[in-house]
Length: 302
Image (cartoon, rainbow, N blue to C red):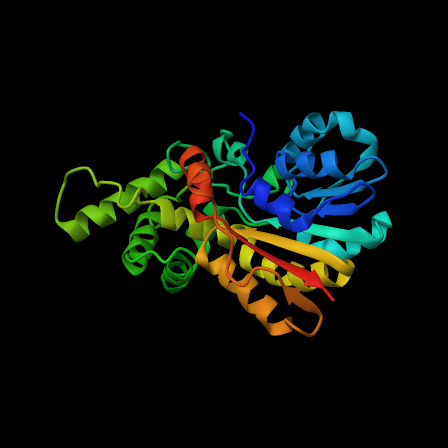
């Protein structure tokens, strides 16, 4: 099933795509945003689509087959944006879109280790098996108890971060943790101990008890926050004067980085167009639950 792009009408409203524009989608995914942008910028417009996941690129090429001559596909991490633009000689750049959400197919594909609802290898690398990054299993089996607790708290805001870290270290002493199912059971057992119950642990606020730990590991594996910090100044630099940058974030850690960076250069090299983040309308939030946490911030280069 194709990933549904969030805040699509709002993205189009703020980015104002017109025929002949050069657009960069830093997080191509299933190309929902890109397809809508291409419909506005052709003829004569061009799109540069970037994704680190080779499977995502294959899907995107399929979805955008009717725009094949208008799109340049690049497999790379968007933290290398300036290098990519230079290599592809993709200038001028009128618009950059960065959607920090991860696509539903990445979550749903078996073997990637993103889901706590399936028992599979504890991987979580966006680049898949071809990536040189450490896997989630590498992290839980090698980091110290203190470091794991810090990861679970800082990246996931998990209230039982120290207790879960202790459980992981104790368990790996006899057997390495290799699957999502093993990790989920440790998390659930930690909650059972804390709550002094042997019953099933309920979802709280719509969240599975393992949600925050899995988010934290995904961020750590893919160095997501460092990547965001790296790409933002590059995105501003590659833009033409009057060009626009839109960033969609999905949790407070991401949004905080985007907000603070934009504020730090507001009035110097850019103008903030969204004084407050744009969020999903009620209908979209009902139809697409992922959109509920999405926040859109947009700037224009001076």
